[in-house]
Image (cartoon, rainbow, N blue to C red):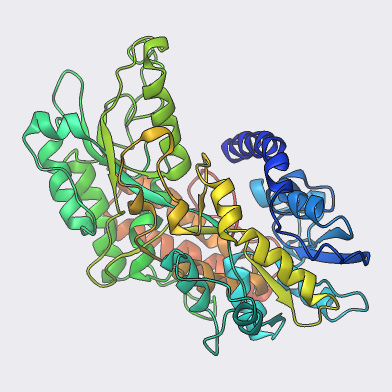
Length: 504
């Protein structure tokens, strides 16, 4: 639900921005030649939950293009229907067959190889690797060279991240915007503790050591040194994924038939997370929210209420702090926070590699496109410096061109922390391949979520928790092997959430 509310605010913001930008863009020569009057159709296929009437996609990427190219009609076709959109957010229950939800890449392939193929493909980063394996995209290099398309200003994490998927070193897509996370810290809490604040490119152990020094668990107003999320409703299992992502620890083998969590490597991770709680460096899973004592305007947010010194935060979430600081005189019981951000910590095994880096508007030209020229025209348009200049300063996403990435309203925080990183692709690309064939594989995660909660609550040892997850997960995987598209449950699983976490 929080995602839906977030998207709603984003759509409203984009709509208002679009209204204001039309007069300005009318004067820009983003479209075709003035003499180009031939009426054409540009077909766009997307797997990103849009349909032909989707306002977000049109307002973000195509409305202004159509305004400047009135002879080009945009036709959007989606590979997902309305029921799949709902289940994408909330998961299907065991009464529904996973076979009901068709693999979007397979549908895209059928469209491209069909009688009326799309010209342009809007896809996710995870899907692009599969599209390339199936030769469903055309390289952009010749068009980029012909138009002298400048890439020197591109954020390396975006440009190289896309290029690294290529089997032949060519560029097959471009993404004009991205969202990522950084580590936000409260300057005052560090100054009060006499501790040097964090800096870019630190390791997780460096951050945990700093967090221990700044923690004040026994104070009248307890302060935790670090939290994986600023929100009180955080999920310990998702926290674990943030920490383990770049370690490339597998949940199950490459065949999806055997769990791989009852190992010394996973034990080391769970021991670390458990010790952080025992040392009161991170908030406890047993933390009770007392509404009588926590009636402040941001009591739901540990960082904004001053109860945590450092937290992982997305670029969109950072805007909430900026807005609150700006309007602090009108917010009762809120003290402005003097903050800054640094890069998310990484592991020594993969320095600089971080999770939570997502590209938006990733587009490529279909290998069977009948109108590749207009497809490239749209890609070039939304990836142009002019488009980036107009979109710069957005509240939720950043442009892929570095020159236009600047803090809004004269803020001075270290905005480079959001893009001077290397995005981790392990979880997405590796597991996406398996989930395409066996959608129910994600159900093997649910016992792990429950067992980790029990371990962190002190009700079970790390060894016993991992062993239980291994056994329950193996049971589920064997059910999936016998019936890949049928329901999969474990009679010995602890009670708790059975929501399937969607692969985005």
